[in-house]
Image (spheres, rainbow, N blue to C red):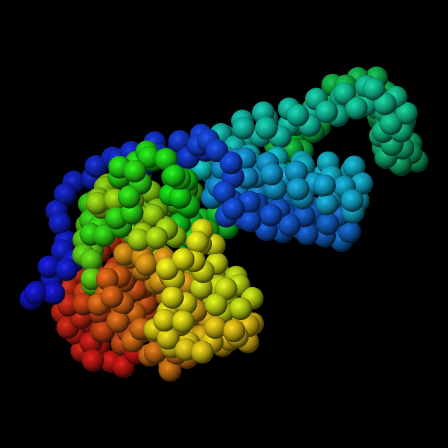
Length: 477
């Protein structure tokens, strides 16, 4: 394999169950205030759910949009603490009240409860039965108690509600009498009268079937979206960014993402029929450029997330410190759509966006390094796709990461943009940043120190570009 092989070696080992699953179970027990990124995500997803709810309120076939509105709340529970979903519900609920009154706010709250139920069940790996049981407690019970309490206290509202039940079923009884089914119509009268007399029992029972059925239907809609979310973005590590000595981290939370060794790592997303990664063993050394190649669905993005700090339930991920995603000296990620990572109005502002302090960051030098010399005062809205991607890398480098994970960051660029960005990634290991670059382009992989080939979630080959790519190693990026 030559000297390059030592940069990323394949190690043997048996499957070892780690603390990953316990760690995931502890994530929502973490104390402390919501962090800025949690609040921001709660605000965005809460607004998305509100828009879908409003559409369901005003448009025909609104039930479909109501079901879709549960997904943002479920996604928020999966990615963040339960508290973030509660904050999103309260904030979006106040806006719903201003736009549609108490009924609109109650409608949004009910959708949020369904989404929270789906998110909690997904995170715990529960199926339909577990989700239905949780829905009884989280969704149906507070709704039933609230309904009975309101109708019990507000007698006029109770009278109108029961009158609507009588009027809503009257046409069917009239139709039965018109066709000579008087006995059936009389039986219908008795049933309606019994329902009105026992409303405190019938209405909660009807809500039970309606709500649990709706949650299970919404779960069918949400699961594919949550699976894609897991495949596209690492779940944030709740302990990264914590100032205290963290659990499942190195002492004092010291960043140390490389060298990193994966030992018999296996990842399967909830509801998936097969592993996204299966029995993967590899090692990434500091100061190397590693290219990851493979067909769609081969596990490239999942591998990138594991290297960036995504917890695993099976196998071990060994590194000298914390992955420290987004922290100084830790791990940085760049994705294929840079517009999702560019937040500042001006270029120079975006480079240091979200940093506690910009002291010691030479913005001009970073912009020159990525080929944006003189762009500091430009508005980010005026940049091309390639320029936005360069800016995203500059912002990542401002944290001085020891590991940069590039998940198909060149996919949306033209040939010139890909060539320039590949050249930039090639320069970073010499500056002390190891790079893992996920790509479909064999020409880009040919510039790496080591190439990792995946197929069906399994590691097929690891070695130099000449060994792995063969004749494709000389292709242009």
